[in-house]
Image 1 (cartoon, chains in turn green, purple, blue, yellow):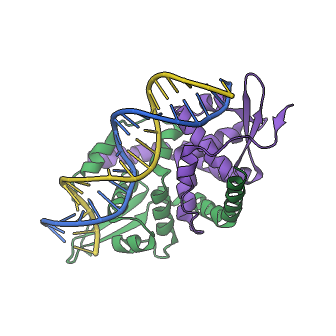
Image 2 (tube, each protein chain N blue to C red):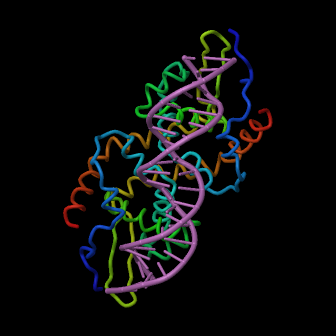
Image 3 (tube, rainbow over the protein chains, first blue to last red):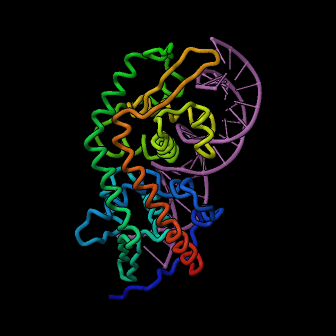
Length: 136
Length: 136
DNA sequence: CAGGATCCTCTGCGATACTG
DNA sequence: CAGTATCGCAGAGGATCCTG
């Protein structure tokens, strides 16, 4: 168990750029950070694992269609906002595991509700859309 | 009450472009459609009104920071997917009202949970972020 | 009032190539 | 393995002007 308490990593270009204005309390800010599809899908995956930890490559496999770049950025953002914890093992080959923080876990029920809603209602949306397009 | 049952409107350029591939059942599709911040904020506003109807300009005033263009696009998308109903009154001056459909309403509890979570936890996120940035 | 059409900018994001 | 850096383009989205 050679885990580093703090991952030895300087700020990324993306992070530096995204750091930007701190922002006030409003939803707008938070929604901008959490509202995109990748964030939601990554968190759903992390919540779905029994052991609660996943490696980078496992996440990439599970989150269908995500690029390596977007997964990295999404995870960095989640870590930065205290929703995900990054466990760095300085082994060879390198190993990194991700898990939800307590704060992150508190968000999970909502995400699962959302996911359930989609499963239950996407057909209705699909139908509505087809009909709407027909009468246009 | 000179309401048209169906708004007499041909497909917009934006809509035609966005029509694209119908898409399979997956979350990915739905999240792409519903996952952006404007969609969520517009729906929250529509849900917040007692009378359940809002005019275009009222919505624009309430959803802070949204441009006229994005509000139009967002509303069109919501209408197309059966989440919002558009009431068109051919008066002078023109009047249009929007309200959530039953399908749209079924999504509201989740959005409000999300909104509540943000209000309760944004400070924690903020703190986590500041600390994370300090030790970088 | 409630948008449509156009222009133009900025960035999201994939593809690719390189490292510890 | 788990990233980082760079390039490049399509698309998001604001600003502006115009109409029924």
